[in-house]
Image 1 (cartoon, rainbow, N blue to C red):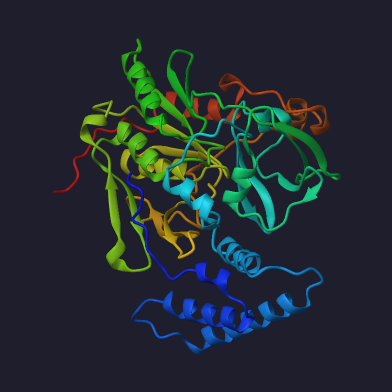
Image 2: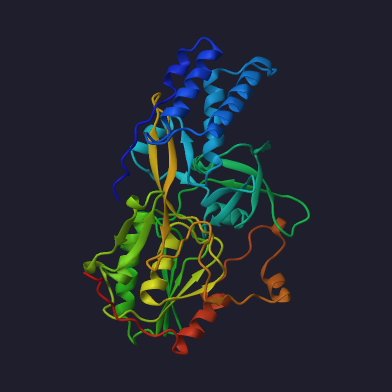
Length: 427
């Protein structure tokens, strides 16, 4: 996917040469005015908000116990503003923006978790199977309140992600709050390179193919294509496919479209809608990518950690291939972002369009509700399978032992859902 076109907006670079607070306030007012659309007159409420902000800026700059320079104050304000929008919007310094323009590079090592700010707390949305965070004992929906003894404050989602990337062997001590635990948990996460394989396949009773996508990256469509071709050639023919997208909150729209194209060919996969109806765009796969002429029955496993690329794929498979979603409601985090460079080299990255399924169901803020709720372990069995958190991570459950996988397998062997022949998009 081509990087969205950047939009130039009035910036903050000339604040550095400001010698008086009055100039800063004037510049802020002009920036607020010109950042509005050309056709929009700023309402009175905008002026009231700007007056309140400049008043607060004056008080802090003149009376805070430690002097703060103008750039720190302005950058802090911009960071807080972007953090208030959604987990995928952020403020980038000039250096961070240059890295953004050069493209996403795989970090030498990372913690293997995806984070958002939820209810003001830094929260793990997903924890990648077998990654450093998972081995340290971190679980989805854990709240990180301290990093190396420092209370977590004002971190955006992107800043938190960068914090847990770096040189292999770098260790972080985390103080974690977990629902159901009386006391916070202490754990140490050591950065390591993630396993290059994002897709694994297991055959259940030689009748059902279980495909797990741990997370999405640029190589996932290639790996998934190889896995599906192997399933296609399997003897005897499988009775169905279980696609596991649980605990998977990473990946771009392009990676989702390329991956879904392997199942759906040139059918519509995603609709993106911005604020204006004129910005609506449709994304479809490619006919040459499709592996199965008649797609075997499918069950897609989802949960509250299913987001971004995984949500796009799950929604498309349900709408276009009649795949059954099984598990629990997904996160509802899926949008298209654009970078808006500012004059001093910094930039705003913000969501400009929301994702909709091929049938028009909105994903952001709503998530996907599965047709079949996932079975839950009884309290006794759950206690047997999950040791006390202080003793380390819970053992990895194999697909043959996973209640949701077994539930999906029984559903496929029973003959529901039915195979789906491809349909050509309307001309």
